[in-house]
Length: 188
Image (cartoon, rainbow, N blue to C red):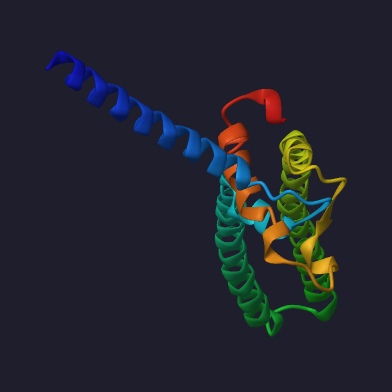
């Protein structure tokens, strides 16, 4: 009786180990074996945890700037209206001085707000550069596993088999390796 139980346990263990090996083999096969791989770099960034964090950060900063711009616009419209009402009560030279001062202030505000918008865009570009540097070792590992000599941008390739596209696999590996990029300074 004990020998029968032992055989059943051995059989169950073999089945479990076989499933584990099959799962590992399936995972290894998920990296296509090809000399050339393709990737959609925009999607790689946008769908990664890192890219999603950056997009949310940029959106939040743009929202703050948009609210600030609306408030400034309301204030400037009110001031312009006040100046227009004063025009009838003022000497032309006196009004021209106020109008020129107002125009100069409007230009200064516009330059300041445009600078803030450029800064937000530059932050996005810098973060994308940080992402590319952090992604490089992961993509090189995928190339090695695939036996590939090159990864091409998918949109630059006229025809290719979907089997050589590693975008989804790269996103998963990058999410595991660097997450949203805030866990450590290693990605910076």
